Image (cartoon, rainbow, N blue to C red):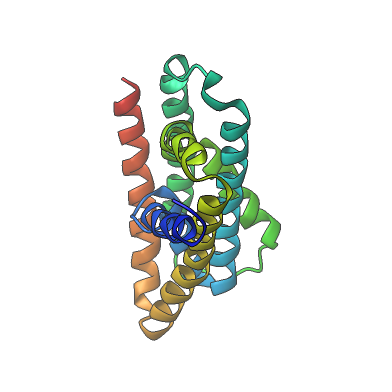
Amino acid sequence: MSGPYEVAFGFVLGLSLAGPPGPMNALIASESVRAWRRGAVTGLGAMSADAVLGAVVYAVGSAFGLREFVRAIYVIGAVVTAAFGVRLLARRAEEPTREVPPVRTYTAALAMGLSNPFQILWWLTSGLAFAYLGGAPLFLGLFGAIATWIVAFPWVVHRGTRKAPSAGRWVALASGVIMLAFAAYFVFLAL
C-alpha cells in the first residue's frame, strides 16, 4: 500500500472501530442526549485515549509481554466500565441539564478509554500490526475516521432525542445497561 490507499484503508478501519456498539459509544450517546457538544467532547476524550494507546504501543513495539497482563486488563476495564454504567443508571434522564465543565466529560472518556480492554487489546495486537503495515498514512486515515465519528454520532443522537424527547431517557437507560453488560463480559473474559 502507498499514500492515498493507506489513508483510505485507515479511514475504513477507523469507522469499523468507532462505529460498533460498545461502552465508549454508550458513554458518548448518553452525553449527547444532553448536548451535542458534550457528546463530541466525550468522543474527543475517547480519541485521545486511542492516541495515547497507539503511541505507547508503537513505542514499545512487540517487546511488550501481553499474555501476563490480559486478565488484569479485563478486570480493570470491567471495574471502570461498571462504575460508568451504574452512574448512568443512577442519573435521572429527566433531571435538568447542568452545565458540566467540558474537561470533566473529556477526562471521564479518557479514563474509560485508557482502561477499556477492547481498546487496549486492539492496540496491543491489531494496532501494532497496522502500525508496521501502514505507518503514518494509515493512522492519518484511522484518526480522520474517528474524528468524523465523534462529531457525526453525537450530532445524530442529540438531534434525534430533540425530536423525540422521551428517547433521551431510553438512550441513557440503554447506555447504562450496555456498559454493565460489557463489564460482565470483561469479567467473563478474565476468567
